[in-house]
Image (cartoon, rainbow, N blue to C red; front, side, top):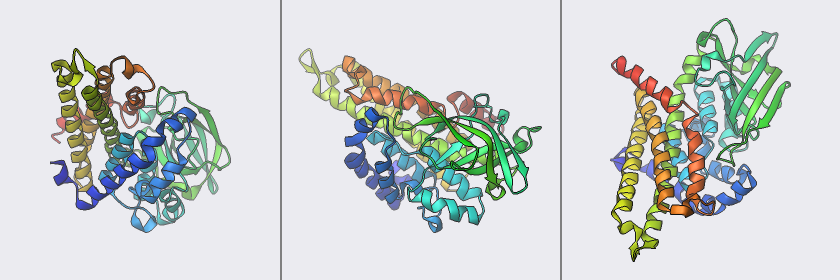
Length: 378
C-alpha cells in the first residue's frame, strides 16, 4: 500500500535521506545533544539534498516536493535521531503560498540553500491553542508597521534569521484582525528572549521573542487582515503531516532497537524475544507504526492531490502523537533497566517525541477538529 502511494522519485528521495541519516546523522547525534548545539553542518548538508526546499518552488531554489516531501524529510531524519527543522519548512510554505514575487525572490533562495533558517512565531503566553486571543499588535505608521508583543515557544528562535509572525492589525477583532508579516531578526526592536530549558530535543533551541516597536517595512505584510488567520491555519495541515512523519520516524527507530535487543538479550536460557509477553509488545509496536505511517502518507497524498484533507491531517497527527509515545515507552520497557539509562538511545527518543504533541495542535484540539469535520459531513 505505502509503496503504491509513493512515486519512483519519492522512493529515491526517501532512500537518499535514509542513507544520509545512517552516514551523517546517527553517528553524530549524541555529540550535538551533549553540547545542546544546533546542527548547522548537518542542516546545510540536508539543504544540498533539497530537504530544506521541499515547500519552496523550483524557480526560487526549492524542490517543490509538497506535503509528502515534508513527511519523508521528517520521518527519515527523525529515524536517524535528529529531525529536520519542521517550522522552517512551514514558514517557507507560508511565504511560497501567500507572499508576492518580490518577497519570494528576496527570502526563499537563501532559505532553500540552508544559508538561513526560518521560524514561525504565533504562540503567546496567553494564546496557544486559542490563537485568536493573541495580543501582539502591528500598527502602520508611514512606510513601516510597528510590532509590539511577546511570542513564546518559538522553535529554532535563536538560530533563525527570517520569521513568519502573526499579529493583530485590528486589535478590536479576533481572527478577522490577524495579519502575517515576514520579520528579520536584525530589524530594530526585535529582541531575542530567553532560551527555554526543555525535557528533550536539546539540539533545537526554543525561545521567547519580544517585539518592542519592532520596525517592519510595510511591504513585508504578506497576508492582510481578514485573510491572515484563515490562510495561515489552512497551512497547518502540511505541518501536521510533517509532525506525524517525525513521530513515525522516532517510533520506527525505537522499534528497531527494541527488536534487536529482544533477539540479543537472554533470560531463562533463551532470547527475551521468544517470551510471549515480549512478542506481543513487538507485534503491537509494528502494528501501530504501520497504521500511523499509512494515515500520514494518506493525508499527505490527499493534500498533494488537491483534496481537502483537514480531517485526515488532524487524525494522523492525533494518532501518531500518542502512538509514538506508546511505542517508545514499550521499547524502553523491553530494554528493562537499560532503557532508562542515557547510554541507550530509547531514553532520549522518549524525551524527544513528547514535545511533538504540542505544536500544530494538541491531540485534544485535533479531536475537536475531527468531530467538527464529521458533523459537517466531511
